[in-house]
Length: 337
Image (cartoon, rainbow, N blue to C red):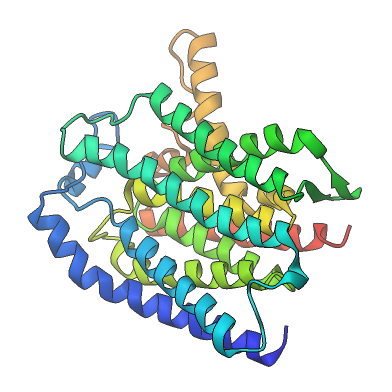
């Protein structure tokens, strides 16, 4: 990475951080006035009732900050710098993956916004039905997968095997990965600062390994800065929650970053916390049914199990972030195998 690119990425991250932090000063009072407060379900930990009424849809902080900053960085790159984000030298697939990736994240965030809106405005605590949410996610994921397929970006790096062209099979593979990422990240958003902290580390990893993929590097930098700014308002005790608006946006963005550098399999070690959270829910349901009412965990997703075991929210965030860092280390090693 040359000096010009490094400066551009650094400035992008810093501007995104300050913009996200400042947006909190403006948007959080607006969310309060609109009474867009989180409704805490009775099935959760009893002490979460103290969070009742905390504004949700705070994901707009990092969505707006990252999108505005990324757009500005791309414009500056194209008009004034020798390093071009969009260049014929990169090929159509690279550019398609970036543009389609941004749209994937935004459309995923749109699904989350609709879900949040139904919860806080229509006062339907469960939001969209499971079928509605899954159907919308499949549509968005399919649109992304088909776009990348048509651009010829079907080759991905498989650890121990090297580059593998999935051909037409890329479409169902990408749809599965995207939908899995959306739901796994969403399940992780259950306590103050957790989803944001884990996602920040994941974005920093993809920024570090983006290499020649300048567009993906800028996208990761804008996201990392914006999430860091959001965390100023979301760490315990949170003044705002990201809501499904934010968590689904992040799931789409992380999937886009992984496919953008042709490394979707790295989502497994990088997203080890997301996967553990998802598996805890699946295992809890299966165990409950097989044992006619017994529970494998005190509560799921996994972060609630540790909460019920006496861990503080801050301790859970620190430990889960450390696990994510370790997963990123494993992912870095896999890139050379």
